[in-house]
Amino acid sequence: MESHRDAVKEIAASVQHYFERGEPFRIYHGSTNSTRQAVHRGQNTVDISLLSRIWEIDTNTQTTLVEPNVPMDRLVESTLKYGLIPPVVMEFPGITAGGGFAGTGGESSSFKYGYFDEIVNSVEIVLGNGDIINASDKENPDLFHGASGAIGSLGITTLLKIQLIQAKKYVKATYHFVRSIPKAIDRIREETLNPALDYVDGILFSKEHGVVITGSLVEDIPISAHVQTFSNAADPWFYLHVKKKTLNNVIAYVEYIPLPEYLFRYDRGGFWVGASAFEYYKFPFNRFTRWLLNDFMHTRMLYRALHGSEQSRKYIVQDLALPFATVGKFIDYTNESFGIWPLWLCPLRQSRLPTLHPHFPETGADGQTLNLMLNVGLWGFGPVQHDRFVAKNRELERKLHEFGGMKWLYAHAYYEENEFWELFDRQWYDGLRRKYMAELLPSVWHKVKVDPTVDRSWRTWVLQSWPLDGFRGLYKAIKSREYLIARNSTWKGRDGSAKLAKKR
Image 1 (cartoon, helix red, strand yellow):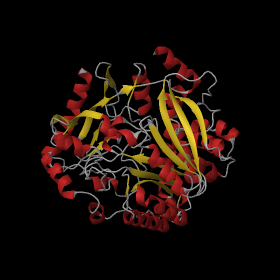
Image 2: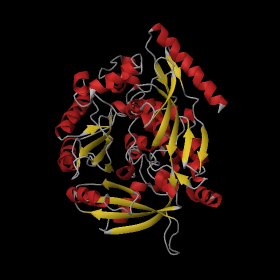
Image 3: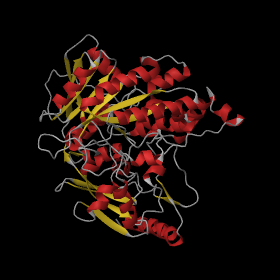
């Protein structure tokens, strides 16, 4: 790991340089899965984009040592060779381990394991003065807990030790049809109590058509079982497949999915956000066109196009966690105010307080364990006119607060600073900033706050008009050549799954 140590020393020296001069600085990661516009390299920027290696996979302790820019697909490919898997895997292949730790990474296994940071055993962090320290539950535990979800505002994470579990070849997936929003919510709550399940999430296609999706890791499957994949160009998009299998009110449909195919099942189409690209270009949306444009429909390319076109200023992309008791009424509100369907439902085990993750201080029968929350993924077109778009987002934030919910901080946030700190423990957070000398880094509010003002110049109006903004995003996505990552992934499809199975 000599090259890692050299790289971290260089990063620490840069941080120390800014600290000694009292100059604020930012971190450049090289990629983003936030919907906010990325901050590019420039003055007073510490570049950590090259920290993207996997250094160790220990089969005895079932842990792996990785740098922060290792994406989920590379992590899964590497650990599966040893028959291991992270308990929580973000469903977009390009999300990084560092992003999962510093952000909020809740997925279909999070009802059981919590957010991604809960499977991180320890981290190496460069503090705001350039010191390099380790943090874990036993060493600097306050920083370890606080840095998870702090969006890199308490220091620079340079190495993570991640806990793994035994992998199995397949996920036995069951699609449970439900006829209403309340029944979907109740069924999800019920399934989270089933110890035999490893994964639980749901899709609401409408008020009358919902599907609760449960999954269990299995090594062997029945001879007659159907094996379904989702990563090949000719494969169905996962959400369309689930909808088709439950259209005729089939109470429960069972199939077997190779494990990596399940983990990244929402990659093609970005859940269902990719369908909006067809709508935007007024292009036919069918099996042939999805096959034809497959390279553009993976999440890495969708994110490139989103940022390149600045469509995030017009498109609602929000994950919103609420108590089970109020989530039904909140969905009624989103239907009336936004009319966006489908919706994603994902149960989440809460982190201990205080935290910068979504939280609600409601405990179970023991008076200590925080109750699960239910996430609602709200993704769809917002108002075209910018002022109305901002107003609808502000309205969403107010309503969410009324229902006891909180948003994930990867997305657009329009809170004023005082409003933001009504949601979180500022005294705790500011104390960590002072103790670990992080005050020259942008605060979490400064990092997540979206500037609602817009450039109203003639040039900007032209560039952000249909279809020029879309073509600009498409050009930048193609220029990135990130479609090659999906093409060359060894986890994917029938061939990839077979290769990994043979290695095991």
